Length: 247
Image (cartoon, rainbow, N blue to C red; front, side):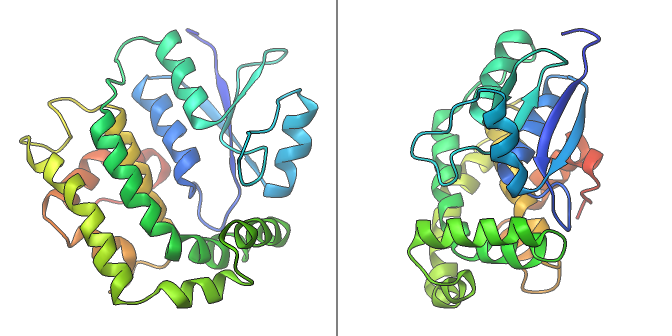
């Protein structure tokens, strides 16, 4: 790995990067100190490219082939999926270790699952549609099928209500408590993979709509003072390289 430069396949959009899944791998690479370049792809390019390389589809996935994917070099294999990339990096670069925190990661996942009700429609409308009509059409059709709805805009209207915001805060509460259990800004004394998981979800909310009063990102950070402190630490450590600002 020393001296080798990998290529991260990431998703095209009006703001880049925007996908929490691909940002997770971006931050994991930086965490490990691994240099990489980025190749931006439309959703319509993913299946032809990855299937041609002999990569099998994800079983039970929304789209079969997905990003991120990591090209290991000319003539070398390509690794698809953030979890597989994480495992590869941990094997190849043992230090610093990711130090998995299953409790924190489970709580982050539970909270993230609530965000998609508004986040996915806003991603389609604000990130994909302005610059990638084919990618937008793919995203809209596959997510509508997955959520059994005729339109992501209608899906958003159904869920943008006080109950959504109450549930969002409820699911975020355990994440906040874990952050506050230490002096911070991380979940433990040193940053770990759980911090990457939280940072990439916050980064997604930052990208999928303009940052004005009432935006999801601002409402999330207003829940507790530990969250802006965490965000700024993540910007300083990893996200700033992609142009994310401190608050």
